[in-house]
Length: 276
Ligand SMILES: [Zn+2]
Image (cartoon, rainbow, N blue to C red; front, side, top):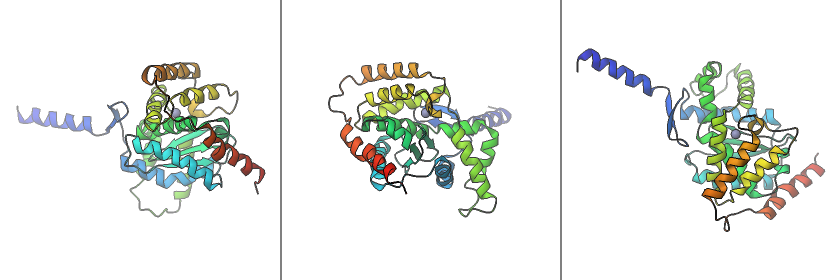
């Protein structure tokens, strides 16, 4: 091979590798400008602001540690089990849940009150976990130069926030909250999320019930689930098919209605009555 051709091939190879990352859920290479370390840094640096903007956390340790214990079961079996995951219940009546890069999952009081079993909670947390593991937000941000430029500074500066940093945190947090996933990303989260929940020991029908509950809401539909694509009907259909074909034997899988009642619904009822 001539020297010039060799150089050309080398440069081409380099161009193809830079700005790509393998999505462990699909096994495919995707365009990615944000590193895994930056994912973790974004989560650590901006999750307090996101938490604040969503409504702050529910002051009930029993409830928080129950949600966390369910989440950690999924964290142990996911494709990025080496990351540290945080599951936080937010004090807001909206029916909502969201995932932040690097391992943060937020779930609102409104959402918790609409669910009835631990298997449904596991389905929801699994769905959000797939968004984190597959780095869906970072992939979306990589395609939006405005955000990726902000992100480029993350991790480069030291741990101490400088002046102006606070405003940037507010802006970035609201951008993260408003970020929309694509049809394909939602499908990945739905289907791989069901697999995660089952691997963590949960009945896959929790995902079907969760989607049916969300479809029945006229208002307060969470951004992550109300997008017209894929339509809720469509999602219920492919989730039902997945459950029936892949997991026909669910006898020994966990549903845990009583535990959910005791650790979430009863706690929230008490919490709302005794609000300061
Ligand atoms: Zn989603």
